[in-house]
Each structure stands twice: as C-alpha cells, then as structure tokens.
Length: 543
Image (tube, rainbow, N blue to C red; front, side):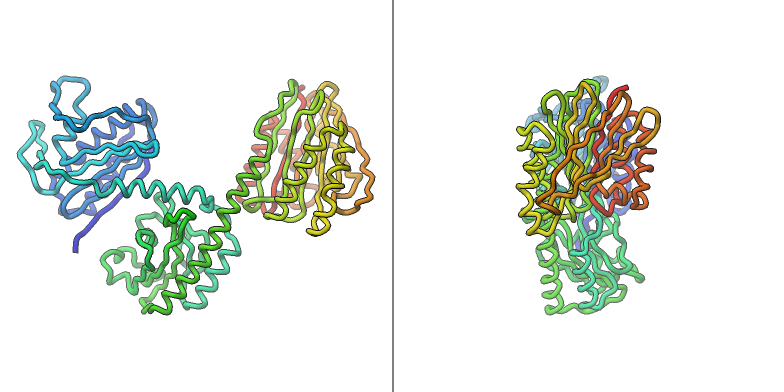
C-alpha cells in the first residue's frame, strides 16, 4: 500500500522568523524516514528560497501571511505555498541560468528550478500559489553547491487544485458563521438522539476549520476540539460517502488515532455548505470495535440530513444577522463637542434589540429599543420600529414620532403577543437638552460631573400594551463632562440581573476615558457569557 504524508500550516510571522517553517518540514521528514537525504536537502533549500521570495516580493519585505503545505508520496515530494500578497510577475518557461555567485539577487528561481522537477506559479482568486515538485531518488548528478540535480520530468501538480478547493471550502465555512458559536438545542437534540439510537458513547457535529476540528455539538467523552491532523473527520470530508471504520487499530490510515478510552470505532457522514462544499461531519464514536451495517449507515445518513437542514437555517440566520447589523448606524454623527458610541450583541444570530441615531435639526435623534423575546420574530419587530421612527422624523418632536410608531405597530404587536420597551429622544447639541420619551424601558442613566448618577424614570408603558396611551415627553440636560448611557436589560444580566447592576455600569463608565471606551468595556464583559441581547448607547458631552 502506498504511503502519503501531508502537513500544512498557516504562517503569519515577521519576515526574519523562519524557524517555524523549518519545524514543519522537519515534522514531515520525521514521518517519512525513507526519504533520501539529497531529496530532503534539495526541497529544504528550494523552500527557503521560495519563502524568501514570497516575503520580499509578495509581502513587500514586511510581515506576511502564507500557507505552507508539504506532501510526501512514494514517488515524489510536493510543496505548495499560498499567499494573499501582490501578484508576482514571473516567467517560468524560459531557460534559467545561475547568476554570478556574488550577485545579491536573482539566484532564487534558477536555483529552485535546478533542484526540482517542476516549479509552478498560479494566481487564483487574488491568491498566489507556488508549487514545487521533486521526484524521489532519481538524480542527474550534482550542482556545484553540492545538492543533487534531479532528472527533469514534466510532472503535473497534484495539490494546486486541492489548495484551491480547500480555499473555497474554508470560505464557505466562514460564510456560514457557525464556528465558535455557543451550543444550540436544535443541534444538541440530534446528537442526543443518535447516541440513544446507535448505543454509542460519543456523537458529534464536527466542523473542519483550517488546522483544527471544532464541534458544534457533542455528547460523550470525545474532545470538543483537536488538531485537524488528528481528526478522522478530515478524511470523511474527502468524499460524499459515509466513512465507516469498524476498528481503527486495524486500519493503517487511522491506527495512530485509536484511543482505547474513546475512539476505536468511527462512522461519519459529510456535511455540506449551501454551495456543496464539504465542511464537516456528523459522526459517532465508540471505545470498542463494532460492526456497522447498511441499515445503520442509512440511519446515520438520515440524521446527517437533519443536521444539514439546521445548517441551512444557520445560513439564513447568518444572512439575517448581516442585514440586522447593517441597519445599525454605520457612521458617527458630526456633532462637535460630543462623543457618540453604541453596540448591539444579539444572544442568537439575530435579536430584538437595536440602537439608532440620525441628524435632526440642530442636533440628533437617538433610539434604543428592546423587543420582548429573542430570535427572528423579535428582530423583524425591531426593524419595523426603527423604520417607523425614522420615517416619523418629519413630525419634529419625540411625541409625534412615538405616537406614529405606536399607531403603526399596535396591531402587529398584539397579534404576535409582543411588546417593545423604548427610549427615544432628541438632543439639542448647543444647549445639551435631551427631550425624550421612555416607554417602559427605565434603563437610562446620566453620569453627572459631581460623580452622582441619575436614573431617568419611565413614565409610559411599552409599545403594544395600551393603544390609548398618552405619550408625555420629559427633558434632561447634559452639562459639559456629563454622559448619558442607555442600555437593554441584557446588560443587567451581565451582573446580578437587578437594578443595582446600574451601579456597576456607572462604576465601569467612570473608569473610561471616552464614550467608545465605555462601549468596548461592555463588549469585553459580554463576549461569550451574555444570556440575552446586549445593547448599549453612550452620549458624552465634552468637558
């Protein structure tokens, strides 16, 4: 049986740091003990020259990111280097002559061509792809430098198409937006069911992400993340067929991956991105070898189809999230003497919170709203509230805008069984006076210059509660050096969930030097732990 050793790694290192490149090559050589020393030295020399060329030309002599892939087969060694640098103007068709030994440049490509059977360059999708090929053990004498010169052959690249396919596969996975997201019940119910149906110890929904395997859902003792090189699922995504390995210890491809405590049996079916790219696997593991017949394989495929459907929903949610984020203010207001900042982090792909601002008269209008609930339904209501309030700017006052929004939304909110809490105000940038309506929100504070904190009270019910509500505006004035912070109730959940959490927000704000610093501090606290949508809007008047 032929053997194949493959190693790949992405580098983003300073130009002078090539130790990690050497380490990757040594790892490949260690796994290929029969490789001739002359082949090894020739490839190492050529790779050193190529990486130097990539750094100098594609990377402009500075920091450069590139992916190095080494493949060792029985018949040859192939190396691919892919980078996103500028396009290289190079002619590899003509005869190369080594320059004078004392020349400062020009030795790289001629030396590579002398040492190797083939040097290829392709520019695909704004990426440079270099492929070096050397036949093992067939040499045609020695170069003056002492390196063996191979017999010249026209060898097609076996990996350049694979590299391009891998780029498309990784891009499809990235666009799905599922990697490194929290667990979701819609996926977990499938893995739990599979564990019961097959009577196995571990079930996982695994995504193959660059150089690692990451689990969206997992039950049992299997690791939630591991290097890609140690993943059986990496092989699963090479084909459209279900991969079944009854006993890893008896299969030369996987014997090194067998673990008597976790993994001796494996069965997995590939999962796909919307474009058909294989991005992961739905798989089952067990610590004991076992048989797996056609009936079981059909069941596994059916469950994989269920997961596939949920992934399609994930893509729709990802697109919805892009749309929702696009509705948030993309530019800061031009308000001399004022700092404005905001953020919205939905607990799911999309959420029911939003903030907004836009110029009105001699100042600006500001809104922070929180729709009861999370997910698509709340997001649709939130987008509608935003659109109605923006279209109501013509009324010239906050009361007219909120009345218009309430009138337009009452029927929809009532039929959906939802309501919306809201802070909507208009700021006169010259006087610092904010005229606002708080519709059941009550989560806005003002940081005074004397160190005190004022909570702005809510005097009206949320939208959707009472169609006959009379919306009464209030006013508050921000003096130089004072800050207004409006937030959703998800911010309270970052602390103890009660209104005393407002004191924690105030303490955090006192340590910040700007409106943006307040927002970034809240973002840091919320990342990875927020159980609810977290939205913050900060308005600070310069001292």
